[in-house]
Image (cartoon, rainbow over all chains, first blue to last red; front, side):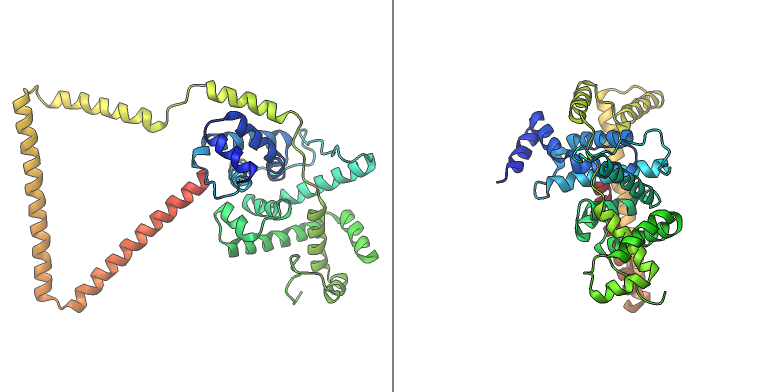
Length: 194
Length: 164
């Protein structure tokens, strides 16, 4: 029995500290999913809090055969999709709540600034996708989940995930070609160099 | 573009690499794929767990809001009992027992009548119509019933999945 399973058993028996410990272990991927889905730090934090509260309320219904991380990701993805469907607003790069994406693990300020630019660019591209397609792209790229697992989490068939992923990639590539010429030229140059 | 688009999940061969240099559509797909792969995850904000702990405490201390049916059902029962007390005159226990017995007997009688009517309908159909007419009808109904049952089951599973 893994250490995580022991924590889960304790949490299901009502041990709040065990539950908080589990959340602390998984907060990084959940926050990334919420942030990439919603595009704003404040909203992402609120969505993560709501995800964790939902997990707390439905802990008795959690199936221990399923990985805890997948269960949390599934709750977070559904919650973010619902939020986006309610809002139907696109993320704006001029948003006053645009987060400080500087990664503290990067000591070089220039590298940190480049990563921040890249992160904002990715966010801009993602904001043009439909909520469900966005969730699929995020789960594929940042969480490295296979298509079958993404399907299980979002209630879709594997073939539906494949076709949506393909469509989303094409949409992103089209947007990349049409709207961001300067970025495209830099990457094209790097492609030619390599 | 007359060829299938580049699939980023496939390994990059020399041939594909050469193609990427000459095909802007496939190159854009590859570039976006590389961009997504090289973008690091966003770290959670500092102090999140403390803020969540405080919210969890609030949630535990706040009285649970009643669900809509928990309000609607007692109100409906109250309205029904008020209405009933207006319509039904006050009865003693024996009269109440007799009226309940009478209502049950009446309901059973009507059910029996309905069953006899259905039986008569089938007997007539069996006598005047050959089985090749009514058997497909019966089978069709059974299939429709099955489809209805499975669609309800799917809807229930989807609802569970969404609310998980």
